[in-house]
Length: 312
Image (cartoon, rainbow, N blue to C red; front, side):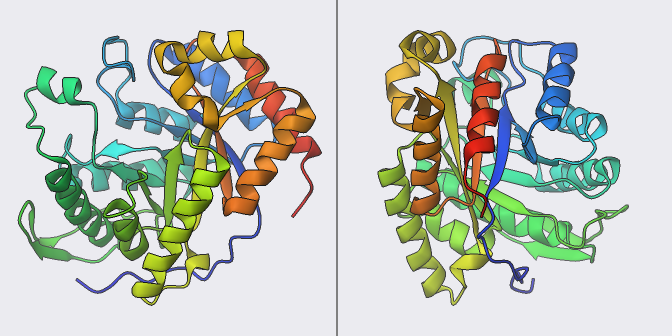
């Protein structure tokens, strides 16, 4: 397989998006939410990939591929992403064909994100082997290489530790000439190195601007090692929004204090200031992370902050 080639981009414009968890909700509620988001100044919507809700207990969770497809069909202009599909849950050939079809449905607006997986209880419930972190990252790295080749529109052959392909063709191919592949995770020893070599975009959730800036610097160093211009990498962060402590705990429950460093809080001016801190730290995309019960007030508060954010 040939080395990936990167589109020539300069990450100076800021994109705002919303990450919508398809759990503990209904199809009708999701569709209404997506339509509301698309009416506001957001240009990206994404979904997650879990059999359970993110708390590892609630089982009311819509399948990720179905949710991604529905998102593509129900929107007209936003990028339709996934943060992130778990490399341990489905074969890359199966996912590549699904993503190509989603790209067809969306008219060329699909992005695909991949992660190494982390929710051990979910693996155990479904009888999926949960290896060490290192082995999960090995799997993810090979998975992304395969996904890249399969989505290229050309016959793909690969012989690796985990996957085998012989002149495999995804047909129909994606509408886009290059489907953006994102990698999620903040590990500075392995994950960011894999991102620098293989991904179009990188995402990490709920960390503060200072921590984010350090990781962007680590990622830029790895890009240098691979001879890659860091400006071809789109760096994003998922943040929460809670006007006050009551809203923070209502949305995030037991993990409220854990995510606090990455939550926009307070007045519009305070939110604008924190958004600016992420931009200064290297973020080219900022996503509001929403989970049910969806707080529309938080969505509208971020939309108001975006309206007050200086144009770039």
